[in-house]
Amino acid sequence: MAIHECFPYLRVSDGDAAVRWYCDVFGGRERFRLVDPADGRVGHAEVELAEGIVIMVSAAYPEMGILAPTGNTGCGIHLHVDDADAVVARAVDAGATVVRPVRDQFYGERSGAFRDPFGHEWLVGHDIESVEPEEMQRRWNAM
Image (cartoon, rainbow, N blue to C red; front, side):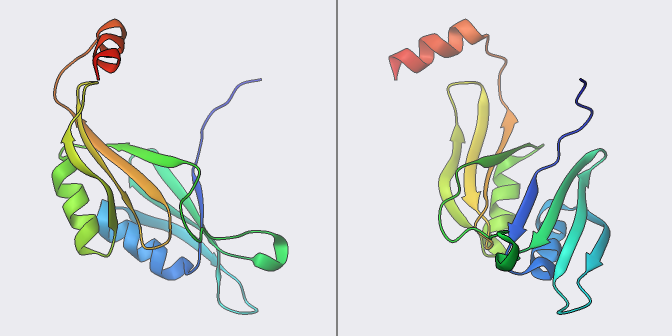
């Protein structure tokens, strides 16, 4: 068995608003969407954040067990970017909530985290130094 790709599939309360938000905040491009003819919900949409980096989005379908987050999520999506401070600031300006402020981290990245208006947590960072795993562990232990 070979895995060829992995796509985060985000379930949201408002598919149309989420697609617009991800395009605006991350500079993404909507590749396409399928709209439910019965009620206009976004049944499926794909947003390309950068070449080859795609997230999929669907409106919630509670009648099918497809639910949007209502609080904290059990996972986060990490984006490695050119300028974490700028991305987090843009997200906050667009309605995100800071979970962890951007700061220099022991593992050699400047990063922070926010929750988007649809309940998903994003970790955003950029490299500030190259740190070997042994040094990361030493720093972790020292904290």
